[in-house]
Image (cartoon, rainbow, N blue to C red; front, side):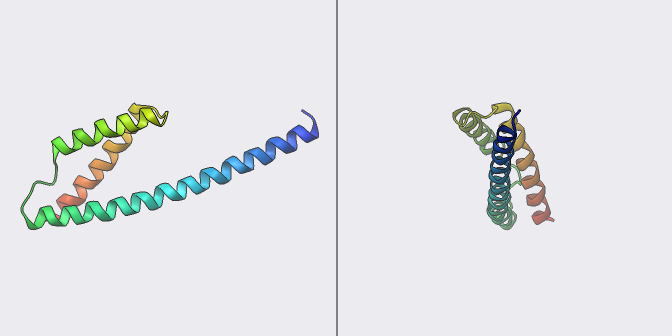
Length: 99
């Protein structure tokens, strides 16, 4: 590779990494907002003696996320695993509210 090509590649690499860093921040803050709402749901469920898990809602969410993943050109299985991980964390939080 020529020096100019190497410099262009380094510049592009830096730009991609900056974008990845911004997107990581967006993901973290978005998850933070999501968990604020799921914590509120957990408190409501505990106050009204509702079960911490809602399998029908969870199935709907997984199907919805798989569809979104396909439209976003993201592996639907990865999206499903990601949402299952989040759902498990949410249910754990809901159970803590019921203690």
